[in-house]
Length: 452
Image (cartoon, rainbow, N blue to C red; front, side, top):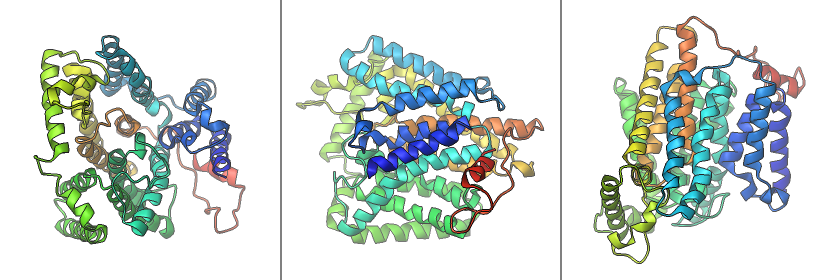
């Protein structure tokens, strides 16, 4: 049954993607995030879905897509990602542990380099929303599964409550917590500004995903959930600094939700969270030591030691096994040296700066008012992810790079509005939603109009 559902989903993306390559691209994003081959038991489990979806998508884009072609390479952010992709390869050539380094390079460089294609396919408001919706829906299955099982069992550390199993990607508790909590600004954006899914039912559904994200993150018993919740409160305070009533209401809801979760989770969860600020706890000591080792290593090797260089830190930490970086910043610093670290910081700084610039430039243009909430949602998502990632080694997960390059697509839309140009793709006049009532046109024609 699971294989049939996945095959139908792939068929949906292929059918509509042959007419509009950007939908085929959304299928690539779904495969990249959801990893359907991990959930199947038939031939799909051994089929390289990610590789072939990328090949088919890029091929159809080159042969079929005749819409407006953007110019993402006019933005320095795009060149920074290109530079970082090249640098990742160079550091792997002189890696301390070549076999392990090339194994990680095989998937890490794909996440970084493939993100460059985002502005080529995502070029209008409806496409930007569809892209964010695809990311959210790719994770929503695990969010629902974990939140429901948490309510039934109370959760637990290292429990495999999600759809995906294992200790990698979104199946890993800390990674899932960071991704789940960073999606909250996206769901709030959908609830208030969605043009693809309007109506009270969809708005309530999007709002309902906010507490579900919190419950699912807390189900992991990972301290990352508390850290990212604090990041969301800080972002809400910054966003509503001129609207004290909204800030007070939002803070009250989050605080009451926190108290409810604490009372429900019990003493086991409270005891684990109490170690978050305990510098004498063994996990905290290990992280502090490996971070100190990383700084010393980067000072002695400014060009980095390649992927998985932490495997050589065992003697520095006085343990029988090496401890991973457990941080985006130290992961990049140790593996890519100060050069890669500066590239990453520059990329994030330019991303935030340009999103803020797009937000300000859209104030004076009534037809570009959608850019403001979009920019805010992306800044909130990126901020939450980076704060959570400060204690989790998720520097090369696709979420980060998709959001960084999506900022280029938003900046490109803002630039066209400033230059007096319209969006290359406009949303057709809205028709009745085909589900729940008899449509006045075939469903496939409805969706073709939606993405026209």
